[in-house]
Length: 91
Image (cartoon, rainbow, N blue to C red; front, top):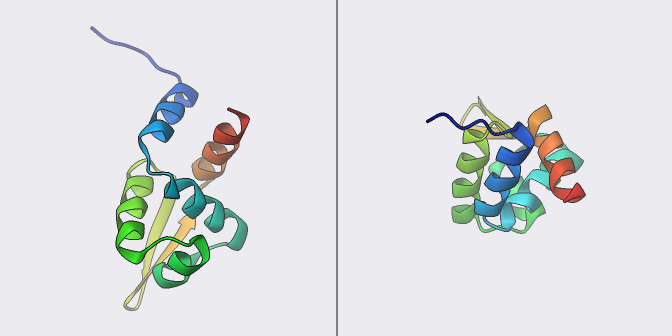
């Protein structure tokens, strides 16, 4: 049996499963722009070990992008990440 779910409904359900720090991480990226994981950890007030887990979840959902610059991983929010934050704020 095939169920169809709107993207908005999917993202709302995904938000329920994400750790509470995920919204802070995504909001920080939207407000401050792209940054490395060390800076993001400090700015979003999230422990580095927790941040790595959150970033991978957000990446899997398509809400953040990760690029390599030398030894650093640079994270940035995607357009979908911006829509996700707006959807979560709207309730």
